[in-house]
Length: 361
Image (cartoon, rainbow, N blue to C red):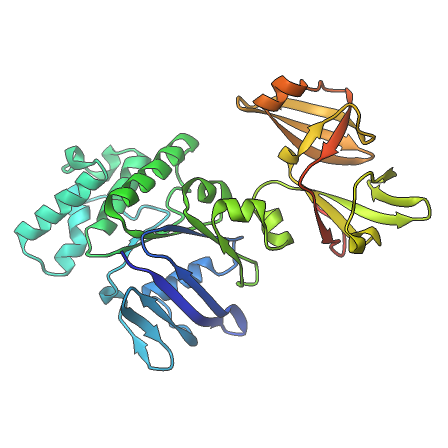
């Protein structure tokens, strides 16, 4: 097991600064998901870790090895960093058998034939693919090919695995299966895994901790999924992780209202700064409940049953909001039908300064 420390990393493409004094520590023996929108610098950070690009400032340490240090002029070559990597597109060679694909990194290291076969078969055993050792990739499913790619990463003596969008090309069922596979492999090996994705759902299912990157490449928040969902550091985290509704607040002569195309009196206790207007109330769909006694009334536009919950779209004033109702809540409070007008109540609300140029829902 090995921890990973990015300290003060800066990288630019010409005049475009992708990472500006970025720092993060990935704990040993954990699955840490690096999450953020496309273009925020996730892949750039991984390329710096792998030695494929050279940052302008900072250092990168894995365990007790300094792989890069700008001040000390240390830059370990990519092939000597001993980091397992699994890419989005599998990158398995179609003309090689499964065993040959997994053996390839060891052949490049000029290991003995006996050692190569022993270690390659052990890696295949870790991903439950030994019976396919002599198959070609075109004889495998997408999930099986991805397990081959993981085995090839495992065969190198490494306490660190980097997975860059490894399940994006799989269908929904296979994605679920691969997330379980990755967790089981990590439990068996105790390896540190840095998992790169823009898919927040995959990150929430898999990770021990999440590092949320903003569009400008800065680290927004680092913590467990529970900490990030229940205690978002700012509006970006609240909006990026999970689904969210936003309702603009306006201070009028008759009092504080939601500006939803028409004024809707706000029945909530609001922080003093938000009570002046120019703020938005943020609330997650599963924190909106039906309550016949509530003065907030909305019309049900649509209702879809998703097996474990109901998904609704409601119109409040002239603004559409989303509501998610668990089966337990549906049995307790009952459901709402399309076209019905219902009372709604907000739980766990948050207040953020309104964005210039409009709001989001």
